[in-house]
Image (cartoon, rainbow, N blue to C red; front, side, top):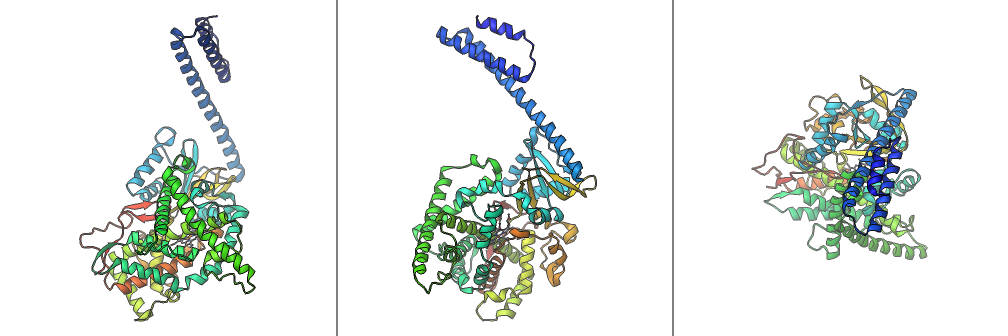
Length: 558
Ligand code: HEM
């Protein structure tokens, strides 16, 4: 039988089903392959062969589309049935205009590149309401800035959500521990971070003093300086001292080569991680050699410190006067509960990641605003004089500075260090609001769907904070005026529920101490003369794992 015959016959056959077509196409390929081997050359058959492969590809594509459509219909029917059972209504749907909704991710990338991605999210909220869903490449994604739904995600229904995507994105650098775990393993990791440890260190001025001294030396006098990179170095130095018991001294020239290598590699890997985050489940596509090398450098450095702490522990176990806190740092305590060095490394890396950039961002936005709003700076200075006069700054007393506390609260409202967060539904779960015409009925989130919680836009809601929600006004927090908003999940810089940030007090102590010391060291902090200061929220922002300033933090110190 010639290939011509076969083609002729197949063209006259009627197709009964997609799988029938598939069978037919593959039989043609097999016959043509055998023809090639018997003739030894392709000749005319090559063209027919090409046409057959083309037909095969088209058929395959049609089958794929049919399958997608069928599964979409099945999914829609199942969702409708479940919605009916749980009294849910359809949520507001964000309209997309391009094939498979890819216009939206492209717009996110463009906005992100231009430093306005959070403004873009706000525009989506303005278009679609406080809770909405959108479909990208066939998957539904949710966005919410509704306190009731956020409370469900973070607290009352927290156990129905997982950190699956986060785990995939972050594990190569930080391993698996508190930040990426769920269920029993998370509970175990959380229990290891005893609140008493944070408490002990956030009242210890000595932990911060040396590094803030180094910061002040680096700033120098009579200069215009970008404080943002210096704050990132400061928080790296403080956090490594706090958790390793050994700072990397990135603010000083005395940093060793090994410490410098670690600081560089950690910085590189962290920036890389934020790019991986943007790809979500496709993060494995972004796994370059330099990133892998940086992870290795970071691991080697931390492993040495862990090894050393394990040896100290081994010696102290032999000593009856052994004191668990003898090493005076978190690792020193941790090694008594964790025998596996790789797991110990993961616990440390999670704390380093969680504690370093978040506090650096808080310091950056605070100093930008204090330099811009001189009247607020003056009030903080008055409070410092009243509290400390010419005495040394005691970190323990900074928490009694009522006005500074309001300033920090207001900064974290306008620029929360973690402005957007997401969780993946581990099961079908009902959120209390956002469905129906009036947006008040419950909505159904299906298993596997991601829910993005946008704290940035929550904190700018005029119905919660008044018509001046976009204005920097620390006084709004005075006399507990916004206690009701805080209690009802309307203010969440540290999130809420069981997974609320355990480093909250430590971070506020570090930020307060640093600001007081800077204002004492520099009697005049202002914007450089040529600076134009955009309106709040209109500045360039860099959204990585945390929210940094795209315009830096330039101040004049004289
Ligand atoms: C201004 C500074 C900080 C802010 C705004 C902040 C904010 C947050 C937020 C929003 C979360 C919840 C993340 C989530 O569940 O997805 C979180 C978790 C966490 N934070 Fe912080 N944080 C700060 C500083 C720190 C510091 C200094 C440490 C420790 C040294 C720390 C340790 C942690 C840890 C371990 C978690 C994970 C908790 C868990 O999953 O159970 N944070 N933080």
